[in-house]
Length: 116
Image 1 (cartoon, rainbow, N blue to C red):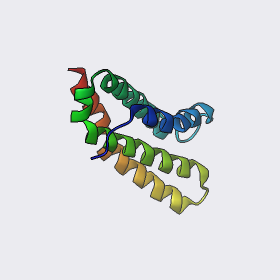
Image 2: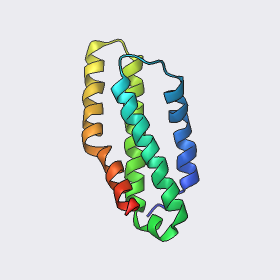
Image 3: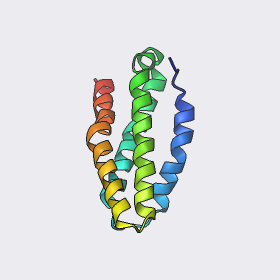
Image 4: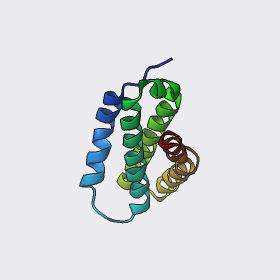
């Protein structure tokens, strides 16, 4: 079992935060809004878990899944904004929809569990 290193996750998410700050408002705002909100929630989760090591150990796999979901969403959102091919845009939108409807809500659920 992999032990979660909270500092490492924060450092890995730094390029995503910078990308969200640097991008221009435009056509794909709902995707970047979703990514921004998920990243905020994930950082809150990491903060709560860093305060309670036993709780962090219990939710280790959930944190790994949440981090992978954010990384996948970021990768597809970036590809969507960088491509001009309509077919690839359709593909990336479909991927983002799947990640956003199946995997990103797990971040909110984990935060709700930890907030109790």
